[in-house]
Every structure is written in structure tokens, then in C-alpha cells.
Length: 138
Image (cartoon, rainbow, N blue to C red; front, side):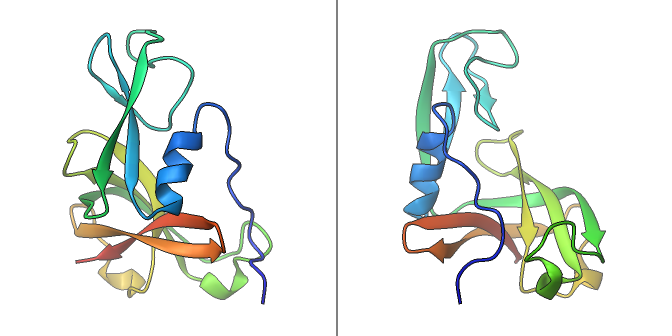
């Protein structure tokens, strides 16, 4: 069965992020002027406006804690009806600290989801050449 959900598009600004995700690794954009990490990535730094940007790879052992979340009991787009209830979480990374990444908490009892709970990033292969970063409770 083919993947039925929307597939995030690669753009000039985010392709290094998605290329790394497809290899099951995390790569984040970093401003060379102020040293801040930017996620989601963009054409310039959201903090200082600098345009000298680089990319740092953090590998595949990515951990964080749930910063915020919502539990959806209704499919908001076609293809999500079999994932209900769907836990959508903003996760604050352990390294680099302060960076927050949005994703689904999968394979967990939604009643166990709490702010501050530790999670591990996992990658779900959705096509032959595309993977989505998601989260699992530790």
C-alpha cells in the first residue's frame, strides 16, 4: 500500500535537513554570526537576520523531552484516520539544548504522554527514499 499522507517538500532552505532525515540522521541549520540553531531552517537567522548559515549533523541518537503536545482525535488530513488518537508533540532537544522539533509520538499509549517526558527520535521510512523523524517515549 502506498503512503497516503502528505510528504513534506524539500526546498532550497530545508533540503539538508530532509537529506539527513532520509539517512536517519538529524542535521540542523546554524547561524555563523550569532551561533543560534534554527529549526525549521530558513534563508536567514530568525534571531539576528544573519545569512551566513551552516549545517551541523547530530547523528541518529537524538533525545529530548516533550515541551508541549496536543492529542488529536480527528483526522485533520486524509490518510491520518488510522493513526487516531494522534499525539503531536513539540520536543526540546537534549543536544543542542533549546532547539525544538515538532513530530508525532508514535507507538505509545496517549495517556502516558506528559510534558517533560523523555523521548527518542526515530525515523519512519515512508517511501523508498524518504523518512520522517518521529518520537517514541523512553
